[in-house]
Length: 259
Image 1 (cartoon, rainbow, N blue to C red):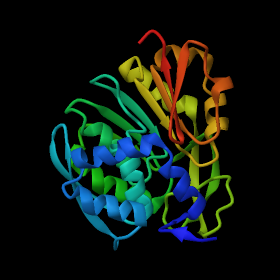
Image 2: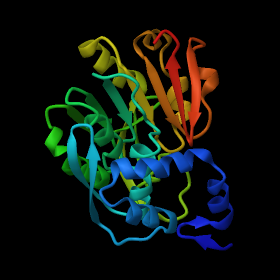
Image 3: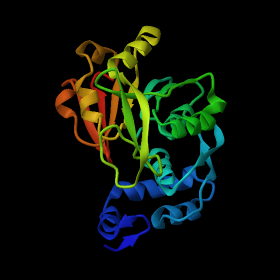
Image 4: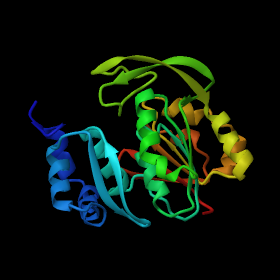
């Protein structure tokens, strides 16, 4: 099948019809220092990597290192399309599947008070995450662990770009396996709630483990959660009725109605 950049031609034209992508393009001018070149790179999947990209945030100009065109697209989904948008300030955030730290970088640059707890099982991604977030060392906590529905030891299927590493999914361009520790989602929640009394947002992007992870959240903990962002397959039947769902791209957002 024909491709435009990294996308097949059908996906490319489908995205042309999505209004959210046009709104994202407008956001390129607010985020990127060189928006026209950045748009061109995103559309046609161009660029050499690793690359340091410079951009604008509410707390000033920042830079971050990315390692592939997949990282660049992830950056744009987070910073331009705002898949993990925060609706209020001063947040406590649990980030399941932190990868190289782009989602955490987004939240940490919305203000100078947000605190993020990062879980990432890949040794390579974890090293890159720590490097990207080192300037926020007092506001982020990182754990080289996967998160799912129980505590156990497993192996992570490692994909070449590191974006699609997975405990359970078969990866086409697999680059071996890596031993890892897996934490029960309730262990992670309890750790934060015991310290902060609540979690303003939980983001879950753990490549095939989303349903297992959300379905395992203990009912008592939903009282302490204000927002859930989940990538991938729908988890709606496991989310309490007092959360309202609004979908944005592949990320589903469930916001507690009382907020």
